[in-house]
Amino acid sequence: MKKMIIAWLGLVVTPLMAADNGVPPKPYGAVPSAAQLRWHEDEIISLVHFSTITYADKEWGYGDEPATLFNPTAFDARQIVRSAKDGGVKLLLLVTKHHGGFCLWPSKYNDTYTVKNSPWRDGKGDMVKELVDACRAEGLKVGFYLSPWDRNHKDYGMPEYVTYFHNQLRELLTNYGEIHEVWFDGANGGDGWYGGAKCTRRIEAEKYYQWDKVMAIVRELQPKAVCFNREDIRWVGNENGTAGDPCWATMNGDGEGSGVRGGSIWMPAESDFPQRNGWFWHPNDHTRSPADLLGRYFASAGRNTVMNIGIAPDRRGLICEDDAAALKGFGDRVRDIFATNLATSAKITASNSRPGFPPDNLIDAKPATYWASDDDMLTPSVTLDFGKPVTFSVISLREYIQLGQRVDDWALDLWDDGVWKEFAAGTCIGAHRLWRGQPITTGKIRLRITKAAACPALAEFGVYLEPEASRREAGKALANAMETGLPKTGWKIVSTSCKGEGELVGNAIDGNPRTLWSTHDKAGHHSPPQEVVVDMGESHELSGFLYLPRQDSITAGNVDRYAFYVSADGKEWGNPAAQGEFGNILANPVQQKVTFDKPATGRYFKFVGLHSADAPFICVAELGVTATK
Ligand code: FUL
Image (cartoon, rainbow, N blue to C red; front, side, top):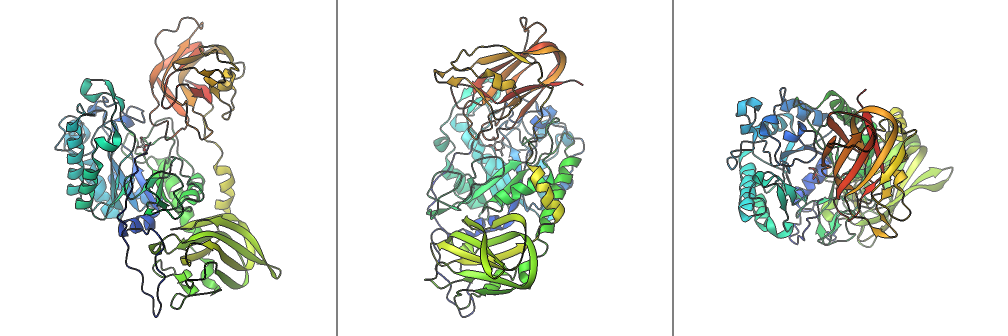
């Protein structure tokens, strides 16, 4: 949940590139600040999640996971940073403190729950410093994520905690050199350990944290930093690395997702998603393939947003071999695709160019030079004439965003036997727009701007051929990486607590992720807790269970607290085999895999949805179980 967005009226106009003998176009609407511009240029950035809960197999810490759990035996900051760098990452955002409250640096404001209280480096280490130093050595920029919500702190919900939060921010932004992004997540309030109180504390996020003071600290101490989820950068609205199309860099002060065409504020979107299913490393999770990451790159960085890929050190304190290989594989594919810009071999002409801003600026590989048309020419076109047939499958367009987002609609044509034929069209270019398709062979390509709010100003028109192997993988990449667990043949629903009309409880075990059991039907809501009992037909020794939240882009009813029982006869249930929380299920509704503390044997299981994060009913797309062997 990252719903904290406020209006920012202090637009900063950066100096315009003065071209030889030319009068640059006037900026249109909102424009990026210098810090935002640098962030756009980074294009691929990365969050690093590592904490006590890496050892507790959770996505959100409750706040009582002992600091003594934190004991990476082979922690190597350089290995982590290099793995990210292999994936093309330019800025590493360190999760210095997640919702569980454990601090990766020895904060002078906390005596009980930091690396100082852990066995790592005998309590003398500073993980933030080691990672920052490694970033500097490898040439990466640094950012900090500091969770406002703190489920460990005894004062959370009271003014004292806010002082603590501000002090920690000040400490982090003072002691570690130049910082380029500060990240505030929107997950807030609710239950937690809170110094042993174990209760629910609700806060009014907009008021409680005193954001004006927070922003003053950031601006004073780190003027080059952009702030995520406040003032500078907005959340794209999901955690799967897919931006809307179009996705505007501008907004009107509130909202997320796709932004607002011609909005008064420059507040572009960041598309964050974890490299694995979860943000933290889990033993039974797995990495996404290079091809999958590449698909998300086109759908995020290629849609005017910055791609933020979450990496997660394992319990040794390393990016595990599979993840490191996938990052490198992804980085290699991006580097291979964009190695040769075919457009540089073409003769480039434009239907109109303003003096001093020729179309050659589109293919000179310089982001600071651009082609622009005369003020009254809103729909100009540019033609690349290769003089011979060339084959391409990727087109890259960039506006010169220092002058704002000016282009609405565009189209691409190929020259086919003496006539132009349109092969692609879209809305929105912004910082970077990528088109990816099947290979096309032609002697000429034309870009038409078909609608613009002000005369277009473009910095790049790139033409590339994605290597065949990389392209072939693309189709396969999106195959669902879901685990199915034990086969469900012969499974039967024994009973359910929900006696709703048109009961569709069978959908929870039909093996189809698209069908749903919901306890909200025509008769109304059937509030949690709600349960279902399943007969598996024969007895199994189970190692855990699988819960798939709804996969229809709606989050309502997804379970965030559960209990799971196993029984030999379906009558005696005993203690739950597992009970707990599905942390972060609202923002990242992926399959949840729970491993029991010890194996549980039986022919029957009972799943209880104890609570839903945002609705008075529960939903299950699919339930499954995993066996010990
Ligand atoms: C989310 C948090 O709640 C997750 O745990 C994670 O830190 C992610 C980057 O933001 O909303």
